[in-house]
View 1 (cartoon, rainbow, N blue to C red):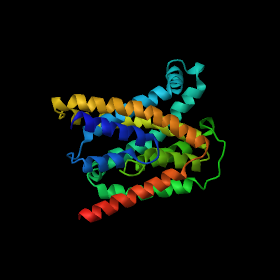
View 2: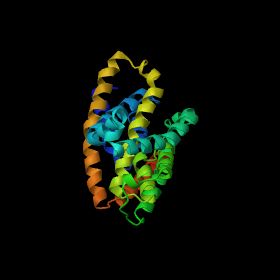
View 3: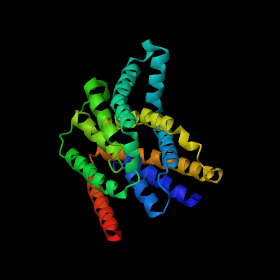
View 4: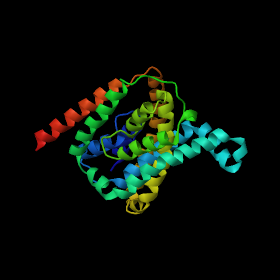
Length: 264
């Protein structure tokens, strides 16, 4: 993989990780179109590390409160409560990832699977557009809410199912305001990516020396673009702009499946 391909995929990752259109689906499809060898697990994980940096920078205040709540519990009760919710949400995600790791990795070699799972994402987003907007905040969430959102994050490991879209929709179904649902979605992304990185550490040893700098360039690009994508999505959600993403996923699914059928 050269620098141009790496940076391009970093841009794709940065845009699609937090906009509800599935970064994994786009990466699988574009790697297929570029003729890159699959599976590129180490590169994909490194791109997610780049997006992780963006989330941590964007929500540095919340992370600071949670750190303080661990060091001095009496000073940050809200941070302690938020940390508990994130831990609870991470449980079903981790169970799904550990239990179905080999099966899930095999799907990342299938552009056809991406096409079909994009339809699921579109359905979720169309449904979200019909939900009544509420004013519930993260502070009012229950542990059951956190478990359900974490379950949807686990399902979103499937390529083509948007992680941000699935968790956003479940958060809204639990009564969260769209902006609050997005905030919790992005915060539970942090332990999910830390866990995925730990699981795939062995793959980094197989990266050739000539690929290390292009990989790093892709990750840094993903970090910068992701920060901008979070900013854009938060403002769109304040205006409850969701359904255009559903139409995008439906269109992407149709184009993918038609393209694959034509090549068969």
